[in-house]
Length: 80
Image (cartoon, one colour):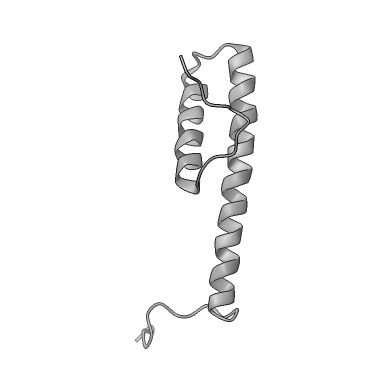
């Protein structure tokens, strides 16, 4: 049975998020023994950090593209 390396970085944000959601569900189920729960927590921490770093990079890229100015998504829209 082939297993993925749990220390390997995820291939992309969506994969990391999906794996993280699976780990959380497994941990919340209460079916993991202590060793498995600790391993899941460790992997989850790595995935959460990866996701946060990816989101931060995307946010920075949007700011650069917008010259640091967030644009109103509803131009001309006011509280009339």
